[in-house]
Amino acid sequence: MYEQIEQNNRNTIFLFAAFSLLIISLSWVLGEYIFGIGSAGLVIGAIFLIVYSLINYFFADKIVLAVSGAREVKKEEYPYLFNIIEGLSIAAGIPKPRAYVIDDTALNAFATGRDPQHAMIVVTTGMLQKLNRQELEGVIAHEMSHIQNYDIRVMTITTVFVGLSVLLSDLILRSVLWGNNRRDDKAGLILIVIGLALAILTPIIATVIKLAISRQREYLADASSALLTRNPDGLASALEKISGDREILEAANKATAHLYIDNPLKNRKEFFDSLFSTHPPIQDRIARLRKM
Image 1 (cartoon, helix red, strand yellow):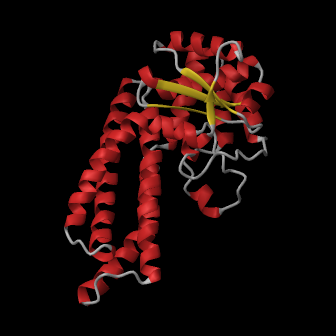
Image 2 (cartoon, rainbow, N blue to C red; image 1 turned 45 degrees about the vertical axis):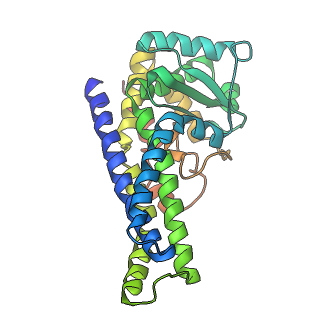
């Protein structure tokens, strides 16, 4: 567990460095190609990056909750959910996370926050309606493990950075296609090529970086869930119900999909969605739990 926490701390630094380089590169192209301000684009990009990083670190979880349409709930509304979260947080030795729900019949859940002291667990109302107590306990323990291992910091930071880098690359691509070039010399032609390359490659690079959130972490959280509850069958049974659920989680998108316990976009039959999935096959996860 401690090795996992240390690895996540290293991955946080890697994510900041990789995305910072990517965003500064995009800022330079925007400055040279679109706004005609030359290298000043680098300075503006660097300042923006510092401000954005601070906002991202302290408010990314709130952004994720807002994008996901999650709302905080009180104990009076879902007392058994609060009891499960409180009991498992004691077992995990971390502060009790705040409870949120997404009003959706799809079966899914995720955890977010920058550390265990500022963590939230989010479940859909479908989870609360369709899972029994042991199954729900297994799911909450899985998310509790992500909090305990500091996975939430890496996952939350990745979500916001991916969105920003894709937005900037899209702006460059649209500017190239619309012919909004402030440079008409040979250097301008080179910038067109660089801009196009960055605009096309950035979503791919962002996806690869997002895959730094290894599928192995899902296996680890599954195993940690079984350790917390002493009942691997509870999570295995929950995952079986989740795998059979055909409901699409409307609030999910490609930027937030990796946060959830199972890929919420699984019902969208796109080749690259499965190829670049951040989640291991759910049947493999169930099989591992059944063997414990």
